[in-house]
Length: 377
Image (cartoon, rainbow, N blue to C red; front, side, top):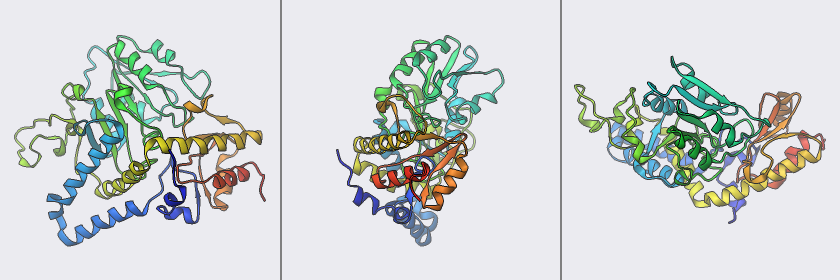
C-alpha cells in the first residue's frame, strides 16, 4: 500500500500555498471535484431543469452507489440527507419510545448526537463518562445500556480526541439489550476504513465535508436492510415517497429502501463535488489512506511530545485517528501564529487541533510542529 503524494498534491490547489492540516474541519477542494461542479453549472446553463431527467438524477444514484462501496453496504441501504442533524431527526422520529425511553451516548461525542433527543419530552439521555479524558472503555457502555435503552448512539471517532471506538463490541452491547446501534461516523469517513457489516451497525451516518473531500451541505445515511421496514419516520419529504414523480398529494407510501429517509431536493453542487472526492478516495484506497494518515499522525505526536507538549489521544497508535489534539494555554493565538506562516489548523477549548490527510507531507508536519513548539524563527 502506497500513496503517491506528489500526484495527489497536484489535485489540490490550496496545497500550492498552504500547509493545510485542517481536513477535519473541511477537506481540501480538488480539481476533480471542481470539474464536476463546473459540469453541473454548464448543464444548468444549457438545459435548465431538463438536466434532472438525465445527468443529475443519474449522479445521485452514482453517489449513493459510491457511498455503498465505501461502507461495504448495498445501494438500497444508502440515503442522501442534508446534514447529520437531518439524518438523526429522521431516524429519531422512526423509533417507538413507549417502552424504551433511554438514549445512551458518551460525553466525548459531538453535541449534535445528544441534542436530537434532549429536546424530546419523556426521553432520558444518558452520557457515558470517560475515565481518561480520551477514550471510553466499552464496559462503561455496558453499564449504561439496559432494557430501557432504545438506542445506543455514539461516534466511530471522537471529535474531541481522535480516538477510534470498537464498533463490533458496542454493537454486541446494544443488541444484547434489544437496542438499536447508531454510529456517527462523520469524523471517520474517508480517513478510517468503515465496514458496516463487520461493525454490525443498524444505522451509520457519515458525509463529504471532511476527509471525503466533497464539501458542506450533505450527509450519508446507512440503514441496515432488515431495519428499514421497522423504521417509518414521522417526518417525510417527496424524495422518500414511493412513486416520487406521481405527485399524488392524497396519499403517502414510503419507499421500501433507505431512500425513505430522504427529504427534499439534495444540494446538487455538493453532490457533484462529492463525486470528485469519492473518485480520488477510491483510486487511492482506504487501506493506503489509513496507513498514510497514521504515519503522519504518529510523526506529529512524536514531534510535539518530544518538545514537552501534551497530546489528548488514545494510548495506542492503532486506536488513534488523524485528529491530533495538542494541549495549549492559548490555542486561538497559536492557530493565528501558525496561519501567519501559512499553516492552517484549528482549535477547540484548551487544544490546537491538527488533522493531516494523505496529501500532506512529512516536511509540512515538521514545519508545523516546529512553529507550535517555538523551534523555528
